[in-house]
Length: 137
Image 1 (spheres, helix red, strand yellow):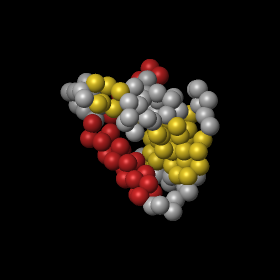
Image 2 (cartoon, rainbow, N blue to C red):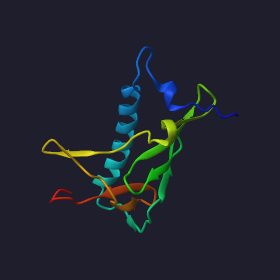
Image 3 (cartoon, rainbow, N blue to C red):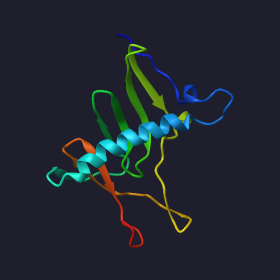
Image 4 (cartoon, rainbow, N blue to C red):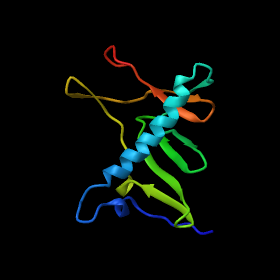
């Protein structure tokens, strides 16, 4: 079985200069649903992590891998998905070293910095970030 790599640029819609937001929304929804199910369980184990600047968090399952989640700001640098159609692994990376997805939050119409959150692992493999700013959690 060979590997089929693709760059972020191949996920562009025809005649469009932006990424396929439908694809990114589906990816985000899958990640959110899988983590929210475990967050809803009070019996799940949680392990706090002590991370240093520049550390990355890897995670994944049988179908998707998130090998580089930046601990400093939660940015997703790349991800891999298993493709039966292409009979291999597809990798999506940000263009020119930029992240594929960059989380951000807004309060009262202003962007709130998401820097140096506290991280923990749910069930020993799902990373979860927590950040408190201006009485927001």
